[in-house]
Length: 111
Image (tube, rainbow, N blue to C red; front, side):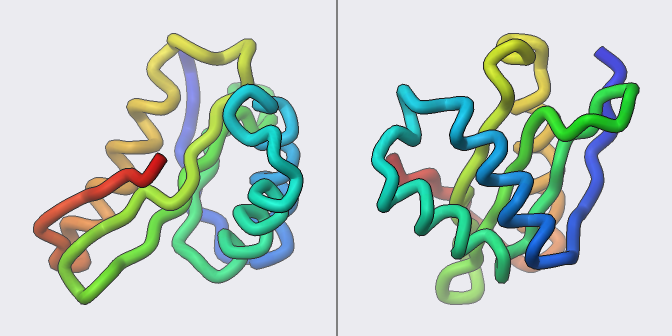
């Protein structure tokens, strides 16, 4: 799969991309109040998207840093038709690189 991982800085675009992906994943993000919280919170967090060859956003990841040394994968989503193609793995690798470069010793995921 020819995918590029791109950092997004624009807060509105972060929220837009997150909402588009999360709404396609109701089995994991089906509670409206929680979905809106994710969409709002990612606006201020480090955020990357996976772009398909045709420039379409097909996934995203956002992270937080706690206590200066613990990275948290805050939200991650990949469009269902792109599952099991290694896109989540690419997004996690980018997040790990960022967290390592920011002195994080641990990475957590809350479910």
